[in-house]
Length: 351
Length: 287
Image (tube, rainbow over all chains, first blue to last red; front, side):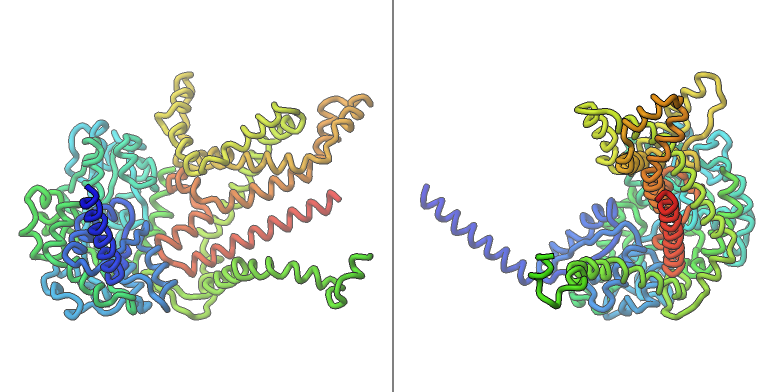
């Protein structure tokens, strides 16, 4: 018995020493991306498998609530970066690139660049698409008996004061503007979204809140609102968590993509290991795993073959032809004008 | 006299005061004045499309702000809504503060704890509480409907912000009023009553003038808190109520226009400066 104890003690000490040694040797990569359910699922689907495959690299996930705060933090650290990698919205990544925060993203970083969908690459942005998400229609299954199939359901008079819309400057509002403009006969949203704004003026009296909090998913799940708009990936996860209360529909008219990109911070402390992680995050395996976990559509064209039919159905991957090509860098230029239109013409009609 | 004589010679003439004030002055300079100056500098930077910042010196943000009717309305709205909320808070808090001031013993302690207890809960939680109470199918609206009156929409508009902020600011107002009630001696009231003054006359001619310093302090505090509050307007305004604080948040966090956010922040500081000036003017007149 004592011999056993001693042996156990020795082995425990050896184990502790080896853990301490490997911890000391491990290269730490700091990744910043969205906190909350994105963090939970990304760590599970991508970060942990990566660390398992690369025991010498430790990835620390530093969650922040939105891209703007990531940019703020990266700005503050520009002379001595603490963060190696950022996953953020593409238009914010453009601003970060303009300020010299991101290192160039080329074949020396990842060999998967050639496999990415063209929408994942944007000129003048030193970061590439890592997730595609799309706007969807959300509804409360108690209040909306029959699943809607069209965006027009938002205009339905029976949902008066029951519609929840995250208004511009939130890009969910911007995406809705572009979709509505196309539905109302607009031909080029960069030139004018007037047709869409006119149609949104008719939606305004139906709206309960333009600022759903904490997000758009909770009030609809709980029945405070009946119908609204949100992002597909989060909606799918919350739908599963809501015990069937939150319904999610990709309407027949199609939708528009939101793109999260992954970028390498210039002068980050763990540049070689960080490159390794970026390469892994863009690999078909990691892309497929994250789609299975959280229903973001993959940006790597080779990933689709690895994803189950069941998960793929819950993304926009099967209806790529119906998606409106939104050039977010061009949209950034008209964003202020769209915001002004909403504030002067749309929102005042809902008071 | 003797203490001054024992001090080293070079510490006289107020040098000791300077020495004692130096640490806090330094902390304030680094922690407060420097960031404010930085903010002021940002307001002259140029914002690039998509959120970048160009380090130049331009008056564009200020000129844009002063020529855009949306922002002028924003300032006007913020000031009058905050003033109206402050006044309402004062009217509903004054009787409570007066009653508390007059009560004694453990009853007073109990009531004081009751007044302070909302401060122990986060304003976010209390705001969500108000949302549950005031939504269209909530208890308040249902009760109004039940008695046959036309049901107003109390949530996700200016009414919601008004109700929520008034309740959230009440503890601050009550505490400020009580702090300022020190000069209110019950014997003075008794004297007024024995000399034949009616209760309303006693209130208007004796109690009210004596409590004016507390009123001024409470109003200043609540006005400043109302102008700068953004969680409650964000949660209860339903995106329909545009105020300075919520706009600063949107510009800084959503649109990423930091130069404009800085310009608006400096504007809020100017509004605070005006409020402080008004407060000290009132105090001077009272003295």
